[in-house]
Image (cartoon, rainbow, N blue to C red; front, side, top):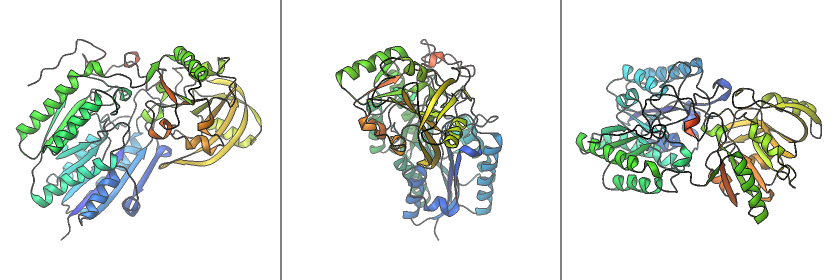
Length: 489
């Protein structure tokens, strides 16, 4: 008889510094056969394909995802959690459960959403093995750790190994069920906060650390993971940790988790931005130098308001500085700024139509602390209904204001995809300067950049962690407290 394995998951990075709460309008949900038939290259796809290949009876619950942002409403999280739990109950008996989770998801009242889900599952079926895939930026908790049998996390940033990680989690579960392998897990937490832009895996020290993880797995460890945590959540669980899964013994798992943690801790001073990183005024001057050299397109990351890391996408003070610069506001073709989230401005642009001139108040709909809105006269250059990037869809308006082209989105969305520019008639490769609300450059936009700079702007994904108002993170913690220490076994 085929093994009965339930799958599904919840996936979100929840930024507690972002006042924009994540609701139903932000969430994409795949259920039942729609989940099983989705030809995705994410962790869920890796899990499903691995289980199907092994001849399992794969039972779908649901997979719910949203662009990183503020915590979910309690209603959204609790209703979706309960739907998964009802599917678990209705599907018993089960041989196993394999879930695709993020590990840094929160609702307004529940600081550990994954731990809450897993705890409820354990109450329903305490003896059923539960294996999970996790994001590299998982913030592991005691509750999460105690409720799983084993886990594997992405090793790559950007996350190019999601499918591979899902397949590893599913393979470990199959090894347990089909071959009787027992997995021992260990977790080692470090007093250390880490911005993702300092931990790209193509540069040191992550290049060496990632190679070490793969070497350990090649030498027999079932899974080796560095969990970089999620620094844009003010939580006791936001710090860096390591996870080891061994088929040999608990002692081996403990030893390996501590060994990996020590290597990470020893390298703590070496983590740095992997590209040019400058404050706003210096970045503007640097850009003009690149223009004079002809090293274009120049791509600037407005990193403090990065929606793919959870920010509100409506902070516009850096946009104003670009408009105020006499060089960057007079380029031909104009500088392109991708993109501000302002649904009311998008509606206004669609009502007026292409070619119309409109008076707008742009930005600061949600984040009114970092900077105010901009009062502008704008010309509607182009409109696009239903631009799709991955699972997510939004309306776009291309406006020309203050000497620059600004893409405005009708919903909170990632800004990494150059197809967004192309969909409104721009050709990224022919632009001199592109500004994206992003951190490290994703492969799609990196390919268009002749030179790039991480601009250390302010917002709810501020890369300068010392500027954030942490109140719940355990202290001392590196780098906020340089004297933080760790006792290794």
